[in-house]
Length: 251
Length: 251
Image (tube, rainbow over all chains, first blue to last red; front, side, top):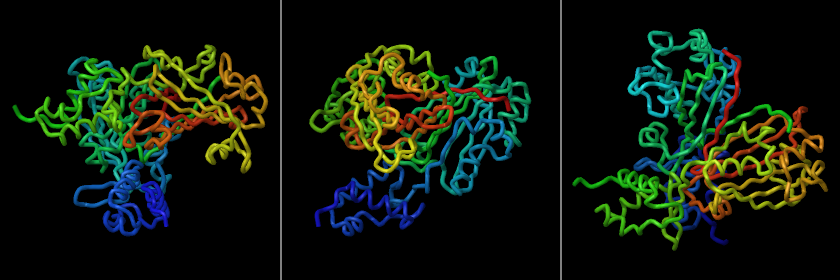
């Protein structure tokens, strides 16, 4: 039998993960055992695992071996749907909906504080140097897998001593509360970039430094064009698909 | 002086690249020379270069050393703008506009052929098994840097023996020609995922296997909801920022 290439081996292991031979959270056999099974060298196994790590199927942690991190499918974040009034009617919000679509249970940890936001955010919110904003920081899970870090910032001039400084926002969330306070959002801007996770992100999201996160900068604007909310969403690229849809005038 | 960490060294080199000490296409000094300059080990230099590779600042090629790949800024792909009738008026099209925004010169190589498209595309275009489509494959450059691979597919039932099978599309491009043929697009869907490049992509886009590409699946639909064009766009994540903006009803 000709020797399998590292891509062949990656394909076989990927297939076994997809068929549930190895499940989310399982530890893969150690490299020497895999090398014996596939009658190849440890270097080849190493290359195969590198491919799967790149795809986010597995993660290798010092002393803990290689574990399966793949979700059954990617979580679909539908930008145009998630901020619609209908989507906001539910008490749970779009993230919860998106995770439930995969048959998983959503969970969020919320921390609210007053901070001087990062320069990029301060500029968007037109804050003066050193001016504070209310930060709503969320760490989000699908079942027990951390899948997202989100920080929303609202100028203190809008949010101070309002419901926006409370942990629970109630039905319709922050967007509805902002509308009730006279800051209805009617225009959204998003920019998407991709980079390696920083140490904090890698730690919480259980990523290795050769994986990547999406950085979504989301801005909500009023009819006057004023940015009343700016949010940064950090998500492992291997867990998420980003969907957008819109109408155009015929050419 | 305390020894610099690999992150410190990465930051210094990144800064030198941004200030133009090393420019796009330059070769960095070999690792032993960098180790001597920073009074550290080759392992530390190796880690620092790994960080910069992950960000797309540099690329290492066997036998060619480490070269600077960073563009001055990321190319901004503004989805809602690029398919508007106004954007299509120009003879050059949105890619050319986006690259010129950075002060660089766009260039595309187009290949037109009849193919059986990938299963995912065939399903979107509702093709029968083995049914052909017209594929317009483009390899795109900013100055001499390859920055995008795009393949558009149009059902043969629409495109056969029309202008859509010619290399040059003229003002307004494919979208305008489709409209003239009675297939005006009024709705766009896009999904964004991220993965490592395959061998062909890595070769053309000059990427290493630990970098990533966006895979944008773009679908243009008529008023009846029929998909008349499906395109796959492959772009190194370190070269591009994806922008979306849209209106919402107030909550």
